[in-house]
Length: 208
Image (cartoon, rainbow, N blue to C red; front, side):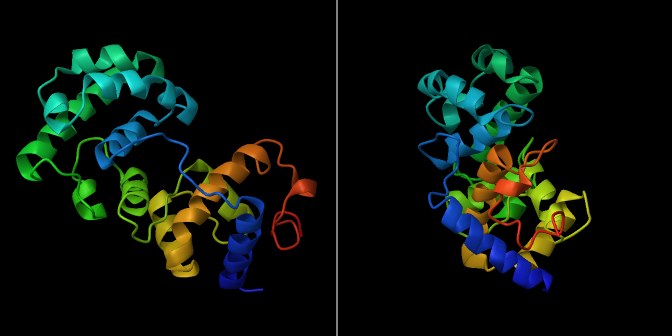
């Protein structure tokens, strides 16, 4: 079985197992998703969803964040961890959005990754979920599961992203990555994967 066939089988198996493939971060507009994803670094999505309602009630748009101080933002996000770095990034990216992007979140990865604190994972999530473009969000679940499937033997997220772009149907890649997160939490965990319960165990290289 080729890697492309394994990838296609994985897409179909996960689609059947998790028909509702949605981002677990809660947001109402591109800016909110951008900031929520920045907050999610080394923090659970559940925790981020607990702090963002008050944060977005206080800071409603790009100008509000750009005019704030990092200390003001930090008061709302302390429970997310690394809050000083994250608050600095949030204020800085808002200023760049205001000054260089007419206050709008860019719709492409190259521009998004120019923003302070925004890497390819966040950029792909925004491009895919907000703008509906083909994207591959390479997080820890994606890296682990696709390696176990035999699609690569790498740890470099950027290299993995481009490998998966070649293997996946572009129309499926966004939802596939969301489903990998769900599967990684429920079944294909880091330490004790439940291979006997896995919908992909008939073709997963770790099992066979």
